[in-house]
Structures are given as C-alpha cells and as structure tokens.
Amino acid sequence: MFTPTPSALLRWAVLYFTVGVALGIYMSITHDFAIMPVHAHVNLIGWVSLALAALIYKVYPAAAASKLATAHFWLSIVALPILSAMLYAFLRGATAVEPVLGVASISILVAVLALLVNVFKNVRD
Image (spheres, one colour):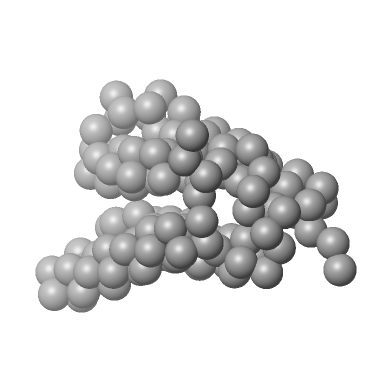
C-alpha cells in the first residue's frame, strides 16, 4: 500500500496553493466574490494544512509511517476536491448537492481527526 511521504503531501499542498491563487485571481477579474468560501477552503485545508502536515511528517518519521498518516493523506486528497466542487455548486444555487457536500465535509473532519490522533500518538521529542 502507498505510504504517503512528506514530499507527496507537499506536492499536493503546492497544487492546492496554485488552485487557490487562481480562484482568487478569477474572483478579482470577474468581481464575483460569491465563491470566497471555496477559495478559503482550498487555501486553508489544501495549502496550509497539507503543507504543515508534510513538515510534521518530515520531522517525525514515526508519524509519517503510521496508518493514521495514510488515512489522513487519502481522506484529504480525495475529499477536498469533492468538497470544493460541491461547495462551488452549492454557492451557485445547486442545493441538491448538499448531502454530498456534507459527506465530503465529514470526510475532511475524519482526516483531521486522524492527524490529531497521529500527532498525539507518534510525535515525541
């Protein structure tokens, strides 16, 4: 099974950073800031959170080698694009996507909880 490496997480983080910046530029050009929550989620969950997790996993290899890191990685990588797309659709009036948006949101929460448990279990001085 694929064990996520700090560099894999960092690559995904930079990809999300690029998408977040592109969304910001799109909003600026169109003067349409209705999708600001999508921009914020992509930047905070995708760029900031994944980049910080990459640093944690680099400094604490035991945390990176755990099944919790794998769960955190895959839940984040799969759920964030779905969350972003469904949030975009919801903000544009497609309220029928709300159940999928809810599942994606809960998946992100589970990913964060995996990171939380991993840090408390495997990060030691």
